[in-house]
Amino acid sequence: MIRLPAATTRYVDTMSRMGFFQNWQAESMERLSAGTKLVTVNKNERLAHKGENLEQLYVLVSGLVRLFIPLPNDMERVVALVGPGESLGEACLVLNEACPYHAVAGRDSHLLAIDAHLFRRELTRDQSIAQQTMEIIARRLMDNLRDTEICAQRSSVQRVACFLMQQQPEKDMISYKFSLPARKQDIAAKLGLTQETFSRMLGFLQKQGLIQVDGAHILVENGLKLAQISTLRETKEPCQP
Amino acid sequence: MIRLPAATTRYVDTMSRMGFFQNWQAESMERLSAGTKLVTVNKNERLAHKGENLEQLYVLVSGLVRLFIPLPNDMERVVALVGPGESLGEACLVLNEACPYHAVAGRDSHLLAIDAHLFRRELTRDQSIAQQTMEIIARRLMDNLRDTEICAQRSSVQRVACFLMQQQPEKDMISYKFSLPARKQDIAAKLGLTQETFSRMLGFLQKQGLIQVDGAHILVENGLKLAQISTLRETKEPCQP
DNA sequence: CGCGACTTTGAAGTAAATCAATGGGCGTGG
DNA sequence: CCACGCCCATTGATTTACTTCAAAGTCGCG
Image (tube, rainbow over all chains, first blue to last red; front, top):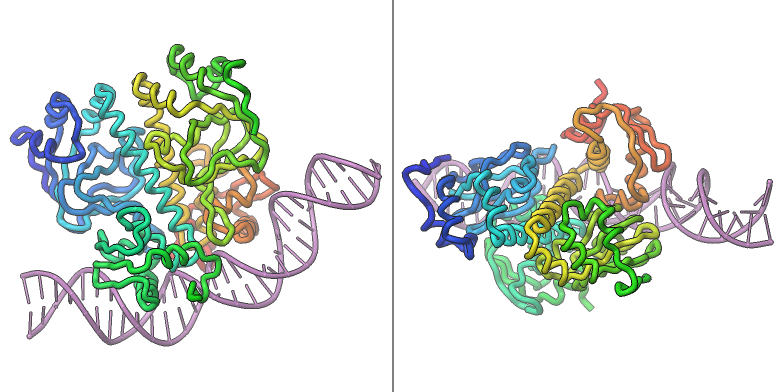
């Protein structure tokens, strides 16, 4: 993990190009940039350790970071996949508590690391930053509840069906396509499944003619039947009349 | 559900007695109380419906409210148990999104219902209210992640062990006692278990001599072995040397 | 072309859900 | 004061869906 020294470079320009810092006042940016470093992490390198106190707020510039909780059986439960423009660690910074998850780069990544103290200070100074941060945290909470809902589904077909429906770009689209945001392994871990089960379920839905899978590229053909499956009481013999 | 009209009664005094409104400015309280009602709900009555937009922020005065997501098989996944002094619905109010869970009274309860618009207005006016609300939401997020961690445990003994350890009043207490905050049914639903499995696991841990169960009253005798169980790779033949 | 990472597929074992019935506590009413 | 009914918890027997273990297959990339 390489940290370019703050003294030599300031990232005001990099920052202002990112959606994350939209609407932040120029003075705030100036103050923050003094305590901001650009961090480079290689794939599989760890950014944050569960239980440690974060010293900075991370904002992803490029790459992918996966947040997960380690399980006793050497498995992981992915709680979030962080993409460019997104931040991580806001909640525990605000509460000044230990980080509740491991953060590991899913690919070679670049991040802005903003000093925690400076950030907290700015939070109290600037109304709109506080407002925006609150919204980010609220958004995370809502996303988490949605994930909880998916993982609560008893059958794995339903979990996968729910997941596929979640990817639907806009409401009431019966057919759509998208790309998996990470390895199938990690998607599976986010759904509370093993990669094997996930693979089998994708295969099953494909055989039913509801979706087409080509690597990470997925085409949902019949979102309606997918919705039916996800609300089915009986898991046997899905909805063919 | 009975709503006492706001015009006749003002709840500034009731509100100021509650920890929730600590540090709120008198003027804020005055303005809010104009749009605040005292709501009474009977046990099993519904307070909020998943998918609907909340028109008010609820703060529980007395009783118990359970937040849950309905599952296809007529089961529930409890996402939170709200006690006196706690609020519900902050996140979706802030984002102005649909409520992600059902809210039902677990017992006869009293709540303050604060008008959503007034609350949002106050949020932008008063720095400290915004700050406090952000912390509440962040707290919920952290709690949620902890619940996710528990539910992610593969074996049900581990889930129950994790839950019992979560009730530990302070760090490094090997023995402690507490009362279940709700019906075992609902605790089970929060752990992603059926009531039957939950009952069996409590019985198992009791037979192991790690805990004593008397109705809703639980005495943890050996928190250390409990911790061992929760981190065990193999679920068979727990930690007796 | 060949290696490593990731995914798919197959076969077997097991833990938890499900179904069903009993048991206990508590409040209400006779 | 006892009896009944209701709700909740427990216990037992059965089933099944998911994990697990193992191996082959695919993809991308140097």
